[in-house]
Image (cartoon, rainbow, N blue to C red; front, side):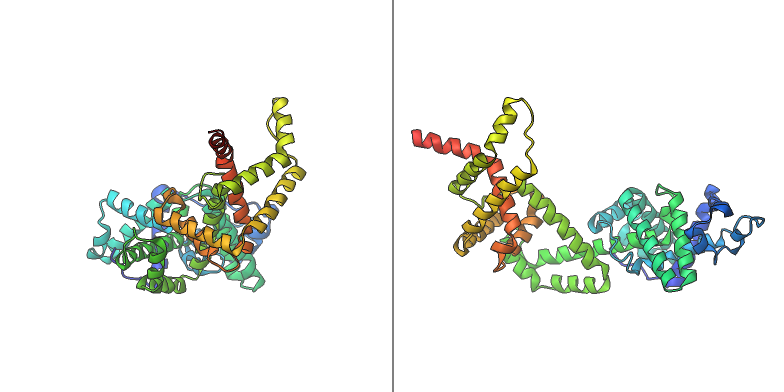
Length: 400
């Protein structure tokens, strides 16, 4: 998508203020009245520099001007430490932006061909549409938490006006639990603008990755190619341009890792890291440690509910077994198995990022120790997935 002309901060501020005023007039919206003076709280006290009249019980209702000014200018806060890592799924934002533009009759690639004023109106229309679609309770809470942290920081720095504006926006947004008025708030728009921009940049990097090599080739070879291509340079440039992106990506990586490891533990993602003999030993260990509790539960017709002591005993034994099992030679065999799994893509596509991440972690010299938790999870998951079936199979083979 062609990039639009970048407005100055003042132009963006005036644009958002005008849009907010227009929405207010069209919908007849008025801000909720402030609490009576007897209900003074910290937020109200912090807002006094903007509304000195609220200290006077006989004064008329405060002017709406400070509200509009704060709502419009709040886009500048998107780069503050409290908000820089708040990013909505970039690829989803970019895709939704294109879909919304097309549904409204706009050609995303042709927006530069219209007048500046019309282009900015179209941009705001599209942005409001995707905020409506992708706005979530979690995002709302992140922004409210960020505003509270910003208010406290500015107050401690003796920035009374800044703290007053943060308190005002916090109070303003606290009244609207939906997304109706949030779509016109500069801070919210800036967060979505940033997310859309990152999404388009990531899409462009994806095209560059396709040019760097065949996406169907060996993933390890492809990864090595990408680290030496312009894709890596573009990624580095994007990380420098958007400081909060690295934390966002790190958080996403943590989520990917946690979800993948849980899937392995539950037997939903099978990697085949352990041999039949090793799994049989683990199954025997399971029965030796927990068999009595399981049989007792079955005889009483109730669900198995292991005590904390019983579960700890089992996992302690498994941990000890895995620690002794994973020698340097055995670790090399596991690495080779992961390479084969990656080449064959022998798993659901949703787990590709996790398996690639696992491959990188397992290649580290100290993986046997550092990744012990994963190795134990994988051992239990593979027992859970096919231990009994394996035992029956081997027994049938022996009888034959």
